Length: 303
Image (cartoon, rainbow, N blue to C red; front, side):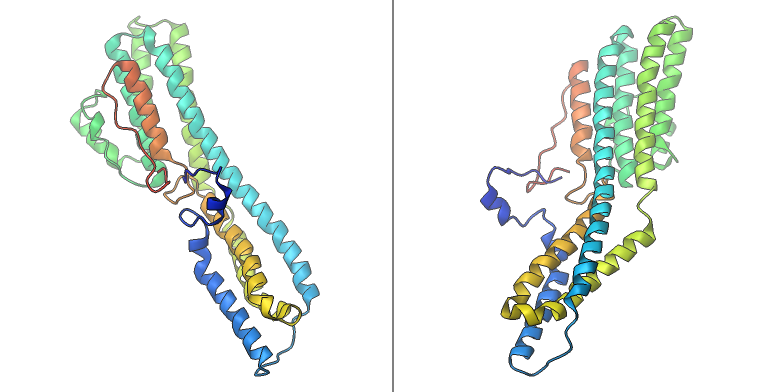
C-alpha cells in the first residue's frame, strides 16, 4: 500500500511511483503516437481518411464509463471488505489478549503465540507465499513433525485454530476454565474462523472472467479508435485531449484490476505484512516478550 503525504497537492500532481501511469504508459504512448501521426499526415495532406462519427464515441463513451464505474465500485468493495476483515482480525486479537488472562500463564502464552502463528499463516495462504515461521517453532507447543508439516498443510490456518480449540476444550475438561469462560474464548476463535472464511471467499471468487475481458477489450478499442474521431475537430490538440481521455479509461481499467485482488503484492494492495507485525508486536508486548521490529514503508510502499 502506498503511504504518501497528500497535503502537498503539487507533488501529488507529479507523482510517479505507486501510480497507475507506469502500468498504462506503453498503451498510452501508442495512442498518443497514433494521434500525432494522424495529425501530421492530415495537416500535410498526405492522408485524409473517413472520419468516425463523433456521436458513436459519445454514446459508447457514456456506456463504457458506466460499466467502468460499476467494475471499479465492485473491485473497491472487495478491497475494502478485505481491509475490514483484517481490521476485525486486529480487534479479535486484542480481545483475546485481554480475555485470556483467566488462563494459566503457560496456557495463555501458548494460545497467544498460536494466534500470532495463525495470522502469519493466513497471510501466507492469501498471498500464496511461504514466508518463514521459524520464530514460532519452539513457542506453540507443536511437535517437530507437526510444525514442519504446516508448510504443506492443505489449510494451515484452520489447523492452528483447531489446535487452539482443542486446548480450550482440554482446559474446560480439566476444570482450568468454566463453561462461561470457555464460551467467551471460543467466540473469539470462531470469529477468527469467520475472518479466514471471508478472506477465502474474496480470493476464490474474482469478478467473472468474461466480463473483465469484454470491458478490457472495449477500453483498448475505444482508445485506439478515438483519434480518428477527434482529429478533424481538434487539429493539433488531438494528441493532448486523446492522451487525457485514454489515460482516464486505461487507468481506471488497470486500477480496478489491482483492487480486485486486495491480498497481493502490488503497490495498491493491502499491507498484510504490516498488519501481521502489528498483531505480533501487540501480543508480544502483553506477554512481556521482546518486540519484533516494526514494518516500515520502503519508497512510500508499505507491504
